[in-house]
Amino acid sequence: MASVHRVGFAAAMDAEAKSHNDLVIGLAGAGQMGADMIVEISLMKGVRLGAVSEIRAQAARDAVLLSGREAGDIVDAGKAADIDLAIERGKVALTDDYVALCAAGRIDVIIDATGNPNIGTLIALEAMKNGKHIVMLNVEADITIGRFLKAEAKKAGVVYTGAAGDEPAATVELVGFAQSIGFEIVAAGKGKNNPLQFDATPDQFEEEARQRDMNPRMLVEFVDGSKTMIEMTAVANATGLKPDVPGMHGPKATREELAQVLCTKADGGVLEHSGVVDYSIGKGVAPGVFCVVKPRHPRVLERMIDLKVGPGPCFALVRPYHLTSLEVPLSAVRAARYLVADMEPLDEPVGECVALAKRDLKPSQTLGKIGEYDYRGFAMTWTDARDAGALPLGLAERARPLRPIKAGEFLTYENCAPDESLIVTQIRRRLDQADSQFAHA
Image (cartoon, rainbow, N blue to C red; front, side, top):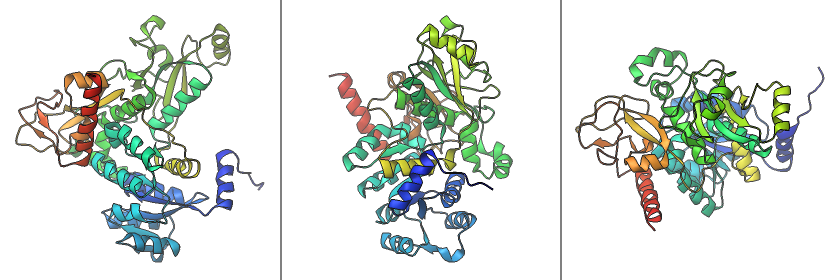
């Protein structure tokens, strides 16, 4: 069999591997996505897994064994020095202490795959404190305080980046491509992967989650629309594209229909404005991402029609897949080797994902996590959310209702008190106060 030469970024990674030691990755979280990354890193050239931080030790151990390592290759480590020693010996360290993970000198870059806004914030700050680049497969944290984390990374001289392969970064990549060749960006977004059920709860999806090797709560975060709202908010905050209407349109547009539906009313679609984020539940779009574009010149319009991209006047550029956890290590390489972020928030907020009650809530409650029983995500513009006093989704966990809240109502700062002991709440308070002072200056 003829050998296939490595080309493009693969060739660049090979060259880096020959001139440097392997890039050592530290991973926080060994759930479904984390386990995928542990296996994927073992298959890549020029990178290696140094350590995993996970409170469920057996889950982390099982993932490392699944990647092909032997039991003797796995070392339990309580301190940063223990992690460094394991890495020097060619082993993989397991720890339940993210502080030790971030402090280990032999680790070059940290990937956060916890999905928890507060834990992700703590990990990101600890990584920066120790001069580590941070890859956030934690969009929940990014949409809540991502611009603060980006600023802190800049101060620390490290890269803060979203994760390649996740829908937000894949969408942003398409937007950048379309901008680079001069198209007007009409809409960008994703196909929703799971049937949409706004009132979904974990107990309804236990069997499906088991079959898919998922946590039921995580599955429900996808099913009830929260993840879609979170991801499109992240795209908004990275590009300046806005939700056209609160909650977005989410039409049942197929891949072939996207460009004729997610375009302005003037062009026959549903949008009030060009330059929006949205999603589709139509057949053939998921698991991909898209960017609806409009040519700025008749010659380009003619060529797009001739190339059979669509009938015009708008066209859908579609990436029909996203590989999520399998692509994330590439962000670690680009951040650590080239100081490049695959996705980062703008300095000023554009979108907000707020919390909407899924059921009637009482003042005696302490609210659960995203994807559970109490609330779901809902995307809107940052300005609309501010004017409504709406509670950001990333602050809803462990919040307490101050009065009865009906199903379908927004959680607001007036009817619900976020947990002020959480670092993510404290940082978001400071951001909001600074924004308020700026707005009234």
